[in-house]
Image (cartoon, rainbow, N blue to C red):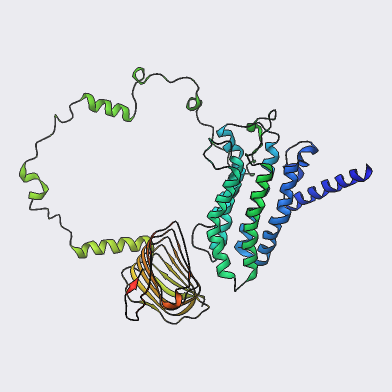
Length: 446
């Protein structure tokens, strides 16, 4: 009997130490009995973090930088979910408005991760996107029944990971022969969700979270206090917006705003004061109004407006590692000839132009381009086409991987050396792949 008591105390101490190491102190957690923290589902969540999340964190620490930052946010989201699971065991099931407020801390962390993918594209964009998209799997906790519009919790976790796996696979392909720390991070991230989170939900919450039948109200869940010196939150909306009293019929209330305008239009003859338009007053018959804009004037206006919005054109090598081609409009003779296998090429915001890359490069990214043609010889890692419309890409040498994401209209011309390329697409349409005909002088075939 004494031995079992000692074992239980040691287990409790170990769990408290794990919480402290994760940045969650005992005072941050709700006030409840020991039985809540020794609940099998909470203990299993600690095991999930120790077995799978620790691997992701260890690999991220070896990489550092933005990968470590987004991993810390990911771990923060998991710890917030654990805190919510503990709260659920002491809280009555709220209505939809109360549920949204209850899950607000988790939503804020997820938005923080997604914010890291915005703005200028990072060198670790695939890492950031993979981690940020994967956090949508934690929304399984919002499942309230078959009529809530969500998939079942297990299916939701699997579907959410499928969205993130596209970018996770890019990390694996890009770094499989370069840096095993990135490969380990990508593999550990996948195992955190499949089988980690999926099996946890399957074992403990296959039908969603179980709320307390006689617990406290969800509205009593403490929210984060505003930081010192921050302005006070805005006052709540007027009570009339949420009034439960039935509204009066519209006929018994004076019309206001646009309703009054339409009512006046219907009651007044608005055409009474209009003059009749004679033939010589029509635009097509007036001699002082040409109404025709020359092609040169139209081109000047369009080019000047597009330049002012997009910024100055660029074609330059930055830091000796990255060729940047930006905001090129109507340029058919863009050439990069002084390049090597350690450099990458980033093409952004170009339209109605043609770029030739005469040499082997490490990676090619074509982002937010329209009616753009790119011809290259060899690429070491991958050629990526993202957020484009009506582009044509020709590989004259070899390319191990070609990915097309969120693109409408793309023609891929492959050489005989690139027929074995791995081609992946996501959220794209009108993708055509053309390969050389069997005859040496034959046409391209799709």
